[in-house]
Image 1 (cartoon, rainbow, N blue to C red):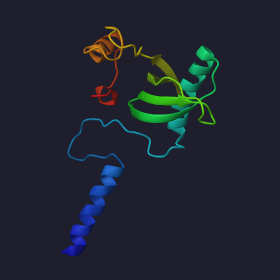
Image 2: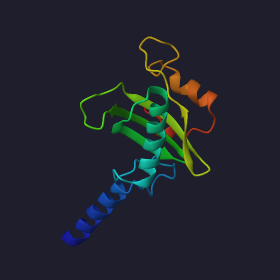
Image 3: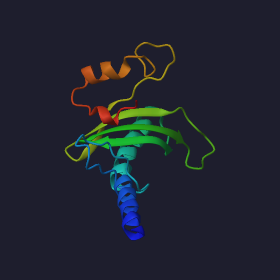
Length: 141
């Protein structure tokens, strides 16, 4: 009996670790588990390139949230200089993989009290109306 219970716990832990759900057929947004995963690197490289183009900065990221589903990704990261001495404003980005490359679809503004920015109560609803096909499971609650 103890062996069977242990096996169930191990199976449950592995299913959670692998982000698998056999009970629910709804797609699950995955977060790349390994910091050096190629998908994660490709997404961060796309955003890093955009920051370089817009601001001339070379940055590394502390990732707060990264969710991926159906060739879409939602990223919230804290950019900083390579040596960690300079920290920059948070970046939030919606990306889509097209022809094998991650492309930025939107970098929402983060100004407080601006009805068109990320903190607006209906921001995500309007985002999904403007950009079709975003899997709702990648968006923050």
